[in-house]
Amino acid sequence: MGYKAEVGLSNKHLHLKSEDIETLFGRGHTLTPTKDLKQPGQFACEEKVDIVGPKGTLKGVRVLGPARPETQVELAMTDARAIGITAPVRESGKLSGTPGIKLIGPAGEVELDYGAIVALRHIHLSPAQALEAGVKDKDIVSIQFGGERGVVFNNVLVRSGEGHESEIHLDTDEGNAAGLNNGALGEILK
Image 1 (cartoon, one colour):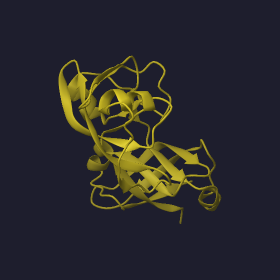
Image 2: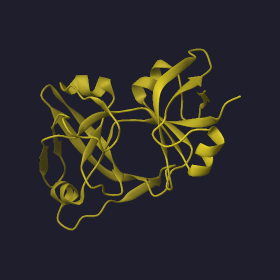
Image 3: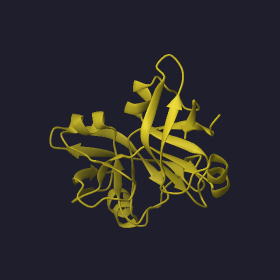
Image 4: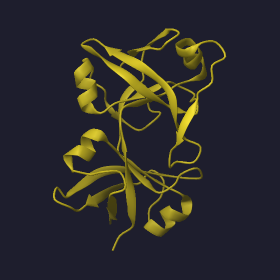
C-alpha cells in the first residue's frame, strides 16, 4: 500500500505582493487573517477583491496570506473561461508568459501584466513525509482516489521542504470531476 494523504480543494484565490495590498486596500494596510490553512504560516484573509477579465468579473475572490514577492491569481479552468482568459497550468510562482488581469479592491485597482494561472496539481510533504512516501521535491507522481467516481490524477508535482505539511492540492474543477470533498484520502502510486 502506498502513502496516503488528505486532499485540500482549492477554490479560486489570489496571493498579493505588499505594494498591491496597499493599492487595493489602502496605504499601510496589512492582511487580516480569518483562518489558518494546513500549510504552516499560510492563512485565508478577510480581504477579497474582484477579478476582471475581457468577458466578465469574478466578484469577492479571497486573498490568501502572507504577502508574496509577486501577485498571483489562481483560477480553475472554468473560472478562467468565464472571464475570457486562457490561463496556463503552472507551478505556483512560475508566472512568466501568463496572462494579465485586472484586480479591483475597495481602495483602488491593479492592472497586472501577468500572473493568472491554473495551479498545477501538487502534493505538499515535509521532508520526513516525503521520505516515508519514497519521493523527493519536484518528483512527478500519480495519485489515486477511490469512491463512486474513482480516478487517478497523473502529473502531480511533489513539493517537499521545511514549511510543508502532507496535503494534496487540487482545484475545484478537479475535485468536482472526481466527486471529492476536503479530507478525502488519495494514495501515491509508485
